[in-house]
Structure formats: C-alpha cells, structure tokens
Image (cartoon, rainbow, N blue to C red; front, side):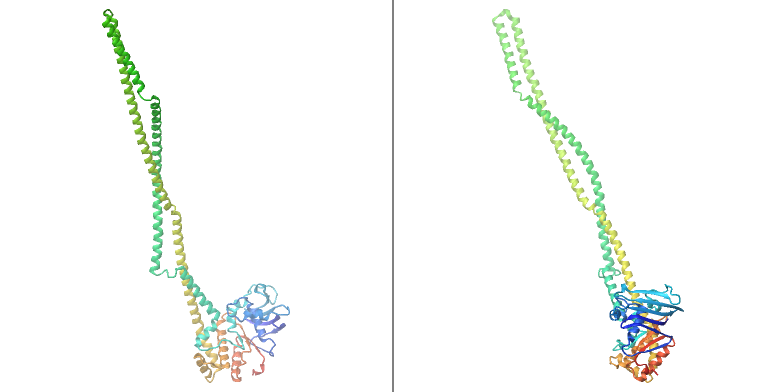
Length: 510
C-alpha cells in the first residue's frame, strides 16, 4: 500500500493543505510549528478513523478532542492511495462524536463508489489495529516506552502487546475465572466432591418426587375407599332414617294409647257386674225354689261376664307387652343403626383427613418434576458453560503464548540486525544489558532501542499490505554519527516501504 496524495480540509490548525507523496523516501522538511505531528496524525486518522472509546492503545484516542478545528472549518479531508494495483480515494469527515463521522471510498480514476473496504480501512488493509500501527510504523520524537529493568525479549513483546491488550487479557481471564466460580458454586465440577454433591442433590429431589408420586397413587386409592364409604354411609343413613321414622310412629301410638288403667277399671267393673249376677242368681235360687232355671241363667251370665272381663284384661295386657317389646326393639335397633352411622361418619372423616395429608405431597409432583428437569438442564448447561470457559481460557493462554512464540524470534532477529547496523563498537549492546539490569540510560540510547524495536515490529506485524512508515522527527536526540547510521537504515527500509520523514532539520541528512 502506498499513499499518493493527502488533502487536509481541516485538521488541527492545518487548512486546505495538499501533499503529493512518492514511493520510497518522502522527506518533508518544515519548520517547528508547521504541523508535522498533525500531518502524521491526519494520515493515521484517515486510515483508521477516530474512536470515542479506543482500547487498542492507539495515539488517536485524544485526536478528536485536540485537533477538531476551533473556527468551524470542516474536520477531515481525503487520502488517495494505491492497494492491490487499484487507486482509491478515502474521504472522511469527523464530527463531535463517532456517530457523526462519515466515510466514503471511491475508485480514484472513475469517481465511482467502491465497496472493497469499509470505514475500518486500516484494519482491513494491514490486518493490525491502530494501536499496533501506533507502536510500530508511527514513530514520534518522544517515545514513552523504555527498556528499564526488564529483559529485552519482554520489552519487545510488550510493544507487540499493548498495555491495554495486557489489561484486557488479564481482565478476560479474571472474568472467566469469576464466571467459572459462579457456575461451579465456588469449586470445580470435575472433582469427585462436586459431582457427588450434585448427585446427592438430584437424589434428594428424585426421592421427594417418588414420595409425592406415591402419595398421589395412595390418594387415588383412598379416594376409591372414600367413595365406597360414602355409598355405605348413604345406605346406613337411609336405614337409620327408616328405623327412626318407625320409632317415631311407635312413640306417637304409645303416647295416644296412654297406660292400661282404663282397661283395668273396665275389667274390675265387668268382674263386679259378673259377681253381682252370680250372687243374684244364687240368692234367687235359694229364696225362690221355683225359679231355679232363671237363677241358673243369671249365674251363668255372671260367670260369662266375669270370664269375658278376665279375657279382655289378659289379651289387652299381652297386646301392650308385645307393643312395648316392639317399641324397645325399635329403640335398640335405632341406637345400633345410629352408632353404625356415626362410625361411618368417623371413618369418612378419617379418610378425608388422610386424603388431605396425601394431597399435600401429591400436589408437589408437577413442581418437583419441573425442578428436577430444570436442575438437570441447569447442571448440564453449567457444565457446558464451564467447559466453554475453560476452553476459552486455554485458548486465550495458548493464543498469547502463540503470539509471543510467533513474533519473538523474528522480532529479536530484526532488532539485532538493526542494532548491529547502528552499533559497530558494541556500546549499544552494553547499554541494553545495563538497561535490562535497571540502570538508566541516556535519551539517545533509549531512542535508538525504541526506534529499532519499532522497525523490527513493522517488519513482523504487517503481513498483508506494507504500511506507510511515519517518522515524526524521531532522531532529534541522536548524535551525528548515530543519526547518520539511522538515516542509512531508513533509506534501506525505503526500498521496501513508503516512508514519510517529517523533520525540521533536513540539513542533517547527508
């Protein structure tokens, strides 16, 4: 990829500035205050846009706030570049927020809209985010990172992985660990204790369900018994009602009959009349001898009256005895029937109480079945989630290790190559060794280490299109000898990369 032309409509203090670039080295020698840093940031902004929240460690995160025109001029411009043999025009305008930004990509030769790339132009061209670009192909005159008290390899890898990346990695691992702890209730589902706890919980739920199901079956059985008892109760109630009805009728008849005194009086009167007839007959027979036949009839009539009176008394007495026996029999039968009915009522109440108790357990069948199903689903889901979490954690760890493994050897090789071109006397190697041990080094030595490390990163990271190397006067702290060595390196790099070298002291380049 190479930039052919930049047109700044409004960016920082620059207005309607246009610059044509060529392949290889582009030396822009401008006085201090011209806007060299602004120009370099404009190119980077046109490639990557401006993000309101940038977690990549890019130097673009403050650009919107610092470089928005204060005079109301349009904030943005366009970039003409070539990639894959095609010329494009990328046009961006920036608002106060990311939502107000616009992006358009056109074929430069025809002006037609192109869909080859989106607003994520830099990422799609180079395969690296703006943070990685900022730490490699964009080299300013004040490098903040230094090698101090860390091994050189760690320093190089820290450039590949930004501080934000490392924080994000640590945060991701912490979140995964927390989520795993939540899903495993503070432990791990792979250990026997946790699996046994799950088994016990499930066993308890299934035992409760089995008991509820048994209660449900028993409740149905007791309902069958209750229906039989209720049928028996209705039969006994009908019997009791019939007996009580007959008993009531007998009681009423008994009350109407009264006692047997009246019949006794009649009997006594009849006896007295009979006795009177007998006495009269005997008297007539004794006093009137000729009246024997008449006296005999009178005696006979008296005897018959007496016999009738005694018969009436006897039969009425027997009838009253049988009536009393029947009355007492009905009373006894009613008492027995009432006790039987009350016994059935008690049995019915006991059965209803039993059914009520069983209904409590039976009512739990549905909820317990749902709870077991939910618990099994949750356990399976949690285990699956735990497996995903652990695979994710392993993937992150492996990805980081692979990242380090992938880049470290190439980074170190290129770094050593560039340091070798800068350090013919071996002084820089001693400076690097001292810096690793925590001994502070001069600004020039630190800059050389930082610049060569970024050259090495540029050679390793960009595997798709070659980037534009933006040098924002990074050699100001180098002495003439080291400066010239660095110039030789960038001209060598210019054979492969397009370089924009912004400086205010172009005369130093020989």
